[in-house]
Length: 338
Image (cartoon, rainbow, N blue to C red; front, top):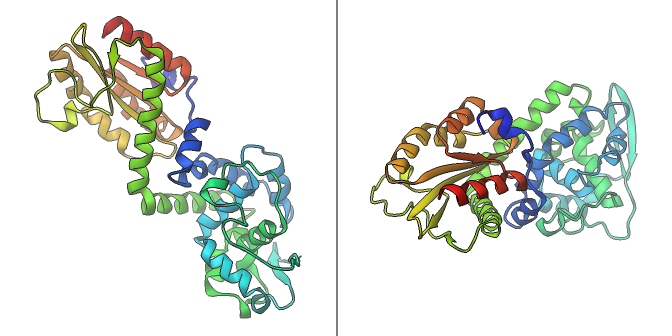
């Protein structure tokens, strides 16, 4: 791979299904980030009526009904505990059983469902981690009620009984029709959320990526190759930034190794910049000991940092993306050179 364009060709860009399913056990953030752009587009093109988002969502099979609801909960910062309380206090909050709201200076009335018992918790709303990937394509009455509240709640014509956080946070509906404002707001909210939960989540996801790549390459390489540790063979230098890698593959017969750095970013951040800054020195030290350096880079966020990725390509012995075809080429390179 000589250019960023070549690397991006055939890349996954968004998390492979296997990774998403594994990551969902650790964090709800990954399936949300993967479908963020679809979520934005559904709302962008759903300005004909206050209910048009339902028709727009029905046309897209990648964003499920429960994932759409989870997006709304994350953006409004109104979670399952709060919603459960609203469900319990429903009669006090909505004495008429209706939400009257304005959209495009027109008053609309949404009539809530009338179940025997209203339960608005994470399990009932199908937004628990274990349920997020069930690919539910239809809304039940409770899910639809909560969606309408989170989209249009702040536009109510009768705010007297509603909690302040609904009036302050359930503001998405007021932006429908202004595509730029809507997109900016949602992306800023997700940037905030990513930073809030990014620490342990990022570490967990990093390990998942490493395990995913390790399993793929192990299946493609002969048993002569070992995947032990994170340091190149016979390296005694103490500079961890330059001599430690996400994955090291060694061949005892040739006494050679290849150190591989792995990065998959759906949203842009500075991790790839740090890898880029070290790329030249990493390769020089590895080559001086007879070893190779490789990178596995994917994700639309990484490809937005074009100059950083290009610098990595300039100082990499082999670079692949997360696709099976690209990883197979890397395995062949390792067999020929390590």
